[in-house]
Length: 100
Image 1 (cartoon, rainbow, N blue to C red):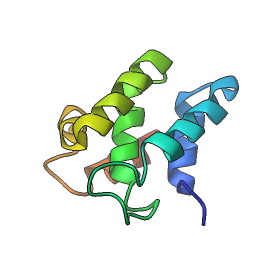
Image 2 (image 1 turned 45 degrees about the horizontal axis):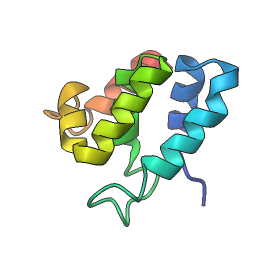
Image 3 (image 1 turned 60 degrees about the horizontal axis):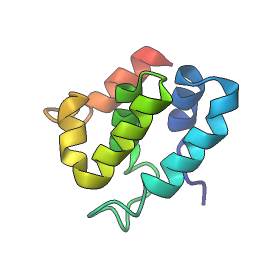
Image 4 (image 1 turned 60 degrees about the vertical axis):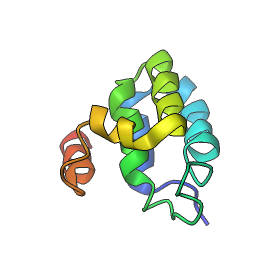
């Protein structure tokens, strides 16, 4: 099974340079996936909201990306609040569609 959705990959490509893409994709799959609390059985599609929040907060900066990943691992609900994806369950999709 693919570890990220096509939409997630498109956002990574949009936000990060080619040299950083593999690293970002690897971190998203290894550190921002089924290892997160309450996400053990989530599919890549289920994880989009969290992963999109990480990408949004990173703004293409690896340092900010690392901070967002740490926040996701601490409490991804706080990550969703910071990314403004908490009030509407589809807000991450609306945001992503404006980007790619």
